[in-house]
Length: 353
Ligand SMILES: Nc1ncnc2c1ncn2[C@@H]1O[C@H](COP(=O)(O)OP(=O)(O)O)[C@@H](O)[C@H]1O
Ligand SMILES: [Mg+2]
Image 1 (cartoon, helix red, strand yellow):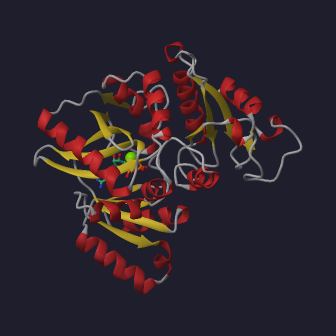
Image 2: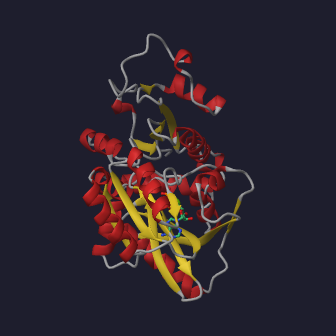
Image 3: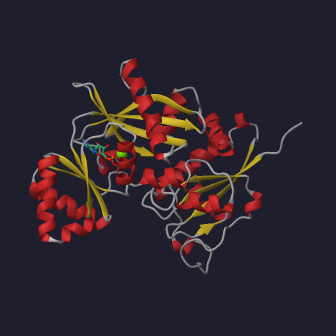
């Protein structure tokens, strides 16, 4: 007897700097769910959140997916409602599983996960805790440290402390003494390398701190390491599985915004050329990282590997990793024997566990 299809609400766009990437990620997710090999197991309702946080029904969502770009305010149905979520553009009883495909603040950080939790409806990916802890680099590092996972030395900074000359002087002395140069200054809550500086002396350190402080009240400063950049994808709920390990290589000093998003400036190697032993250590670290922040469903874990000293450091976890056709997360699973249609079907299944 044919079972009725699972009705999946794919929510994308979002009030975040990664709005445009989210549109491309959602297109890939929907392509997988509606692939003929899934034999109409899923009925997809796309829902669009514009840059100002308004939620729109499938009619609007489909035009965004068609043009693969955000709609300008004057292309949206008028009059525009107030910003933010005012009401759901779909009857929640017509959705079986919610599938947030939102990157960055207001989507990857536990906010939308809290909404679905209150609605008592299943959704793909981590819950409030894992999403929130995974988003904030300081909270994330504290959780990794508590779990005993190796990380590069770092110091957390309150942006407000930069305002006070005495506190600032003390801070600079401790950063220089404990971390040295080069070091990396990061806002705790962005992504895509936005607001990150690699600094080599006190003037650059000060400039880096001031730049990051404009973007976030919470900052992280990390000792710079020379290392290969490796990524591992995790999938599952009760039982977490790790993919083959991939590597990002680029012809730049570090993986900054321009290098990330300029065609041809970086390449990925899947699988990364590594011994089985090192790959396995990375896979174990990826699963440990998920457990440390209580991430599940999907996550991409990024690590630094110092080949000369055979040392690994956990860099970060992404609980809603990029999912465009070129993104590392689906590509790593493809190379691990889970083609896209099977991967998204598995992700929906983890929400229903
Ligand atoms: N401690 C570090 N040592 C060396 N390179 C670093 C360090 N921290 C960050 N980087 C470089 O900056 C990039 C972006 O940093 P990351 O913490 O991953 O931020 P984002 O969340 O924006 O991706 C990394 O991919 C790496 O190239
Ligand atoms: Mg990163």
